[in-house]
Length: 162
Image 1: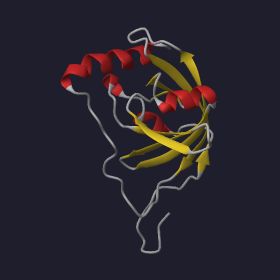
Image 2: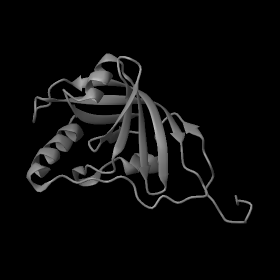
Image 3: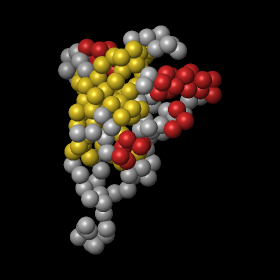
């Protein structure tokens, strides 16, 4: 397939019922990494949209995402009240929006009881990539040295949940 100038491009897909392989691999998070960052969108009680970046979000399967959140965070409160969620990923050559339903699977995480673990059942993945551009980098973060053990423990617990 080529565009009007003859440049080769990958086949385009619009939506999928689960994470395509390249998206799944981007969120598998080797070595319990906290990047790439996901932008999680929820709905406040008054209907106002709310977004927040999450480094803890990881893909468990192509149909299941998992993250941890502080109990006092707006996102946690919104997901406990109304599980509708949209998650965006912008990473090298990947731009997707995931629509799904979230639920609390561990109200108090073992390593920090002020945090809960949530899972998102993937309902639809929408391709937001435009074939005429190249995404060279995504949003990445790293923990400050004194918090690295905390993040490693959080990611290990999410990973070990099965």
